[in-house]
Every structure is written in structure tokens, then in C-alpha cells.
Length: 126
Image (tube, rainbow, N blue to C red; front, side):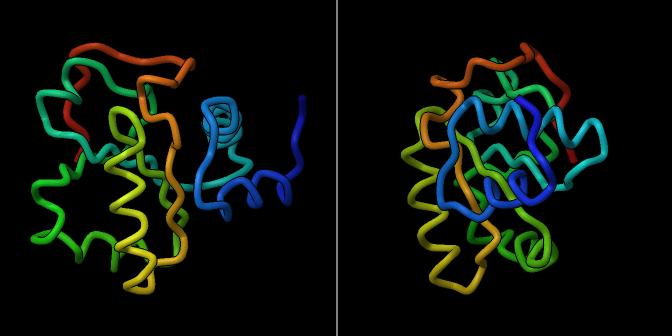
């Protein structure tokens, strides 16, 4: 199914998204139709084991408090968070939204419920 820009942007305004929606957004981003940041909040060993192809950033939950400035820098850009099952991202998203970061959405099923392309031993993104 083909989505227009408005429909794609609406996906990024919800609090959570499905595997299918993220796959659609990643494809649309490759085509230059939309822009967002895909951020993995798992630990480094989890990321290198298996990550979603197209992840832009790795910011482990254990380092989140020390690196809140990253979210400040991305405040105007939609950010999609993912973890293993969606539990950590749900908690992080809730806390960030309470701090005024409203462009945050999370992959509700985490990488365990993601059916798109993944990578093993991917290089750590910046």
C-alpha cells in the first residue's frame, strides 16, 4: 500500500507503532518522503547481536540520564525508539514525554516482534 506524506507523518504522531508501520516508514525514508531518527535503546551487546537495519543511533537505557542532551538536540525531529520487547521503550517514552519531548514514538513489540530486515553484528551507529 502506498502512503502519502500526511499519512506517514500521522504514524509518527502516535505513541506506539507496529512492525508494519516501521517497515513502511523506513522504506519511505529511503525514498526521501519522510525523515525521522530510529534509535535503539538496548545495550551494546544486544545491538551487535541483532539490530533493525536502518537504525541511526544506539543510546543504551543505562546511559540515558547522562545523555538527555541527545533528545534536546533532536527535539524538532521525530524519534522512533525500539528495544527488545517494547517494555523499556514504553517507559523511556513516557518519561521523555513528561519532560516535554513530544516527537517520541516507540515500536510497541520491540525487535522481537519486528518482521522487517535486521542485521547481525552491525557496526555501532554514532
